[in-house]
Image (cartoon, rainbow, N blue to C red):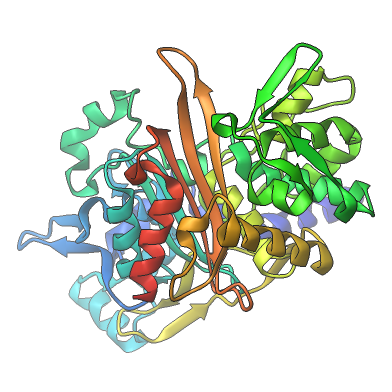
Amino acid sequence: MLLFIALMGYLVYFTIVRADTFVNSPYNQRQDAFAKKVVRGDITDRNGNVLAQTEAAEDGTETRVYPYGSLFAHVVGYSDAELGKTGLESVENFELLTSNAFFVEKIQNEFNGTKNQGDTVVTTLDADLQQAAYDALGDNKGAVVVMEADTGKILSMVSKPDYDPNNLAADWEILNTDEENSPLLNRATNGSYAPGSVFKIVTTLAFMRQNSDYQSYTYDCTGSITVDNTTIPCFDNTVHGFEDLRSSFANSCNSSFANIGLSLDLAKYKETAEDLLFNSALPGVLDYTKSSFVLDEGAEVSEIMMTAMGQGRTTVSPYHMALITQAVANGGTLMEPYLVEQVTNYTGTEVRRNVPKSYRRLMTSEEAAQLKEYMAAVVNEGTGSVLSGRSYTVAGKTGTAEYSLVDGERTHSWFVGFTNVDNPELVISVITEGSDGSAGGKAVNIAGEILDSYYG
């Protein structure tokens, strides 16, 4: 009896809880059967612009077409009979190969030996905003993620270098062997980067939690800090002088944050990082790389100092930093990110709709409000001042992450932030690889171009 109950429980779990996973598996041959009877449905942006569709020739040959070329390459992905599926083409495969056309029409098509039209996946993506992000990123390697602060809807996701899914088969060998550019890699979700100073959001939260009198913190910055033969300089060896926690954050003072790091209980520091989803699963449907925080009790002084300012062995993706920023903007609660607004049949009749829902509270509302104040100071008086004085307000954090000292210093440029500070609207996360320090390669400038386009 126990074995029978266990078997029945497993069958229920398999058919209800895990059904979508197995149906969407590329190894599930049932998908081939669906494709014989259903024309793969369209994928559109939230305004109805077609991002992917199937075109049929007179002889019945079907071709998957991507009207925007490389613009949505990584987030929409591709569907190819020989090369498989990625992105939303993979995630929503079952929906695209399911037809909810009017039942009489489906019966008629069965008798006529005609395929039914698959359902349409309406995404949360915005083609105009995607184009703005794509253009602003320019020739830089990197990624952009834009979300709604209060819903978790992902409005834009860009990764470069990219590829044109319309030419996938012809370009496959080059795309699959280009290790220098990795054009098939979605850097937004699978990129694994040193966070640089955007990680100071995490360090600041840890310090606030461990020190109830954190607002009385003071530090006199002389341009660098040296402890146990380890020297941490501020950017360009800038002497910031007397600072409190707010100005340390606004000025992105490396010396002050190295000092803060040395004062932290490392076990609690790690706990704060893991509260913000480091070393753990992230919500979302696309493949991603876990972020890593590896600072344990007994760590070397040099490692503690480096970690506190976002260097060391800490790694994070642009997508994860967008989630942390979204939680700050949303009063501490992370909304579950999503990419699909609704699924309709091919005539537009709704089949199902996704609605915003809370994923997890990452911090208290008081902590979020304090971080929001500090992030506003970054723009109003600190390292992100290029974004001040616009038609919209911004709070954020800039970052510069060293990743190579071979043939001279090489860095990544970061910016994370949100707009309309009093009632947050958009969350943005930007990274550019190998920034040379010019305006066109700075993440904060790229964020400004994107936001100007949206609010213009």
